[in-house]
Amino acid sequence: MATERTSVEIGFDGGQVIPARLDNNQVKALRKALGSGDSPHEIETEEGILLIDLGKVIFVRIDAGAKTVGF
Image (tube, rainbow, N blue to C red):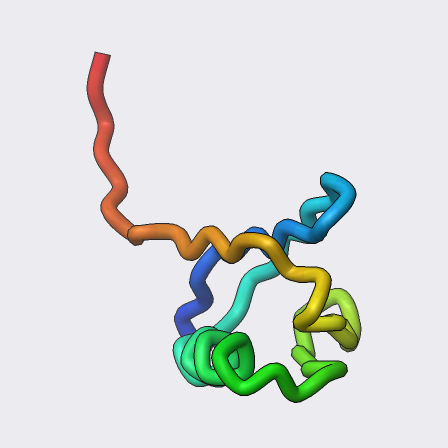
């Protein structure tokens, strides 16, 4: 069975935004790392490894997971 992944966007000072699909453990590790200031933070994604300079991160958007269909 495939691991469920969450859509995340990491926004940096200067305007760049990196989208990624992370599993729950990676999301928790990223949230914890943001408070610690330990840089760089390494995230393994389906596309490759991201090394994040936490001092440059200005936001992280984590998909709420609620999917709705409407008109």
